[in-house]
Length: 257
Image (tube, rainbow, N blue to C red; front, side, top):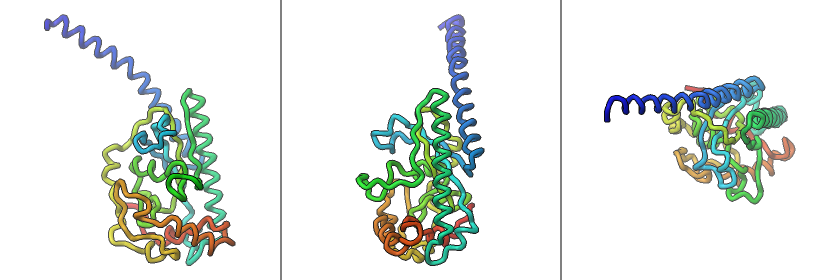
């Protein structure tokens, strides 16, 4: 290959790089706008991930996930003793409503810039779902893959800064998103519960197995969702129609690294 041919290849390579840069910059701009939008609407944290491999077939057309969350009130959680409080139920319901609103606003923004978006409800149980007592997609999966925490012995997402005192929302999209900390996430995917079993000992439904979560663990290895749901429905029907408990959240000592 002579010098002229080498120069020609280099010129073509530079042209291709220049052609890609505007699109990359535009997507990065959209991603920054999405994060600003979510935090401006009340979100406490935002993460991005690619989830096509773990999505059900019906959702694979939206391979990228925006996971966001709201930190719950410590004052309200701290009031919980051996049963949920009326204030906690109201807080839970209000935060869920805010998450759904943030998800809607985010999805509409993505739609307005020419892409598709699918919002996953903040709290949802589908009776005929393949996995009983589950929704169409687990918010926890997106949060873990985005590198924001792990699944605790209570079966809940444990945020690296806020522990389990959070609620999550998810927007799936075909807008290509960049994972912000791809190296960092692999450092926190491992459970940090260690030998702590406070949530297991405190669970009135005895629904927690005490097993440590690992990547690929099935939910039933960690928590008996049916036992949890039936106990709440039987004993806390007068408080939020038996939809909340909060004891395992209250007793968890993790408050960030």
